[in-house]
Length: 268
Image (cartoon, rainbow, N blue to C red; front, side):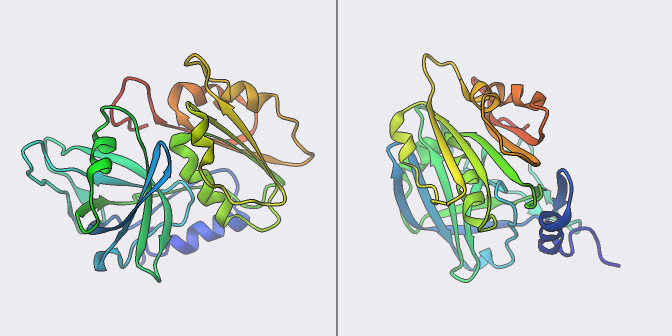
């Protein structure tokens, strides 16, 4: 008998077409060793790695904010990686190895490539690593574990994100229906981060904010938006405290904290 992970692509696509609310859809979770194929400075504070390798075969990612974990070596250089099991999940070593989550910006199964974008910030484990990584170096990638899928048949969408969730918003714009109606609210710390490329769509308006004095205006800006008639879905992702007020927006929504000030490796 087939299990719930047998056809994740079909289940996500079906929810996009006719589903209601959000649906958690599991993927077979793999552990892969890939190699850095290319490194690109997307903005002054964002680096993109293109990863590739034969182990990318069978990789699953069908929702715009799917994420993987990069598993880093221990400080002494030891690589302790999880292993797959019969349940199509992973058994992790203890204590847990250092790891960080990253959104799948692009997966091209034909080219055998995976793009991940990294926000640069002082002292961060992954930020320090990505600034020194070279083409050809191995990278251990776990996941994605599955999708939190939301429908693609609403009349209008609002995407409220900070720099860490820009890859998810960008992928959603790339993959959403051609006639999509949406407002994208992007809040960053540095105006240069607004150089991050987003697809130009006829029915999409982008609102660009810069965080002033460490205070976020993301939630207030979303609440002040003039929404068109019909059903609106809200996707909000970024710093946990900044997006939390949007859980009470009154809209059908997916609101998720990607990181939290003062907390390394948030797992919400």
